[in-house]
Image (tube, rainbow, N blue to C red):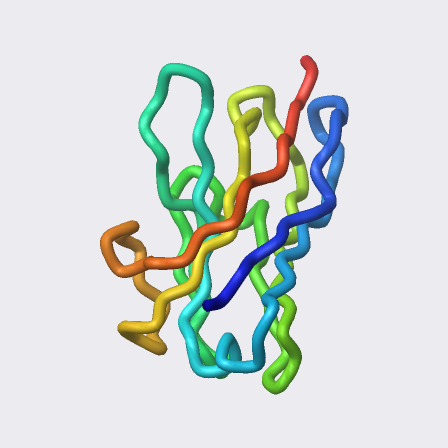
Length: 125
C-alpha cells in the first residue's frame, strides 16, 4: 500500500515562502495523479493543487493561483509544493494525496484514496 509522508512545513511571516515535499513509499506512485489539500481548524478540507502522473498538467485553487507551484519529476517518488507570498489565511495542515483511479490532475478529494498525515503551515501577520 502506498504510504505518503509530507515534510517542509513551518512558521513564516506573511509574504514569506515555504517548500513542502511529499515522499511515497512505492514506485507505483509514478503512475498516480497527486494533489495537495489543506485543512484549517474548524473548516472543511479544501483542494489546493493537483498534478498529473507525468507532471504535464496541473490545477490550482483560485485562492493560490500565481502564488503556489506544484511539481514532480517523472520516475521519482516525490512531489513538491512551492508556497510563495504566503498570507495568514494560508495557515492550515497541508496534506499530500495520491489517486490510483486516475492519472489526471483532479480537484475533487473523492478521487484520492491515499493520504499523508499532513504538515503544519502557519503564517503570521
